[in-house]
Image 1 (cartoon, rainbow, N blue to C red):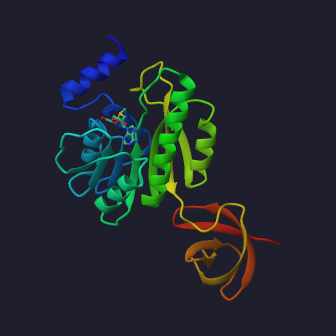
Image 2: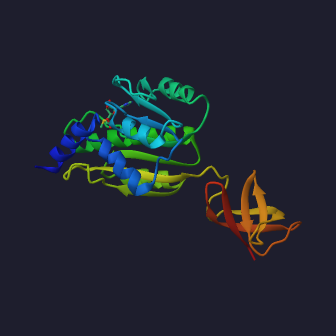
Image 3: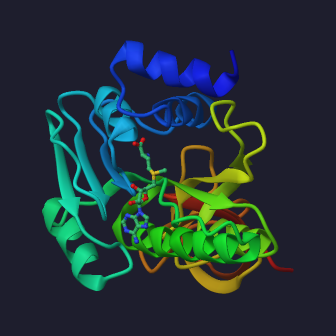
Length: 254
Ligand code: SAM
């Protein structure tokens, strides 16, 4: 039996609507994406395998919203929206469904209708992944995670670099449940950065306080930066050395 049949049969037996469900399970176990109580947005969600898995992982206290061009048969505890994610109106509806709250995780399994012409299918899949990326930037809370499917090709590296600039780090994962010969891969980005600074930036800061480890604490537009070897009351020039979702580190520029 081929691996494809294997996942197909497992999905049937275990009550999942698609074999794709196992891809999200594998991505989640590799990258620790969805936790109990999370708010999850799933783009390109029909027929709903990922929504079922997201619902299980987020639990009763979680919120799961799925969007697709196709109608999605209802799933307990999951809100579904029928619409085209490349249209602003659909994105507005997703925002409304979150009640102006933020998402912890945005995942996209959106795929274009395949034409068989490789460069066209690649370009369209990158366009959909970029649409998902822009949506994730609008919806994600600081520290939130993002996943997007893309068909590998010449524009994959550029997409990865753009995603990398907005998150702590990004990995590409080819789940075992994807077909062997498939060129699909998933960009998995962890830790949405909303900090007003990036690694390498030089800024002048006032040291306002002392952290538990004895480092000086500066605020850049409300964002906390720890600066070793400084004391409250000093104004110093620093180079940002590390940016995390909720705080960063800087070094004195001599
Ligand atoms: N993850 C799903 C599951 O587990 O059942 C399978 C998703 S399927 C591979 C890809 C989906 O992306 C299709 O249902 C397609 O309708 C949807 N899609 C493609 N372009 C879209 C767009 N612009 N807006 C919303 N959905 C889109």
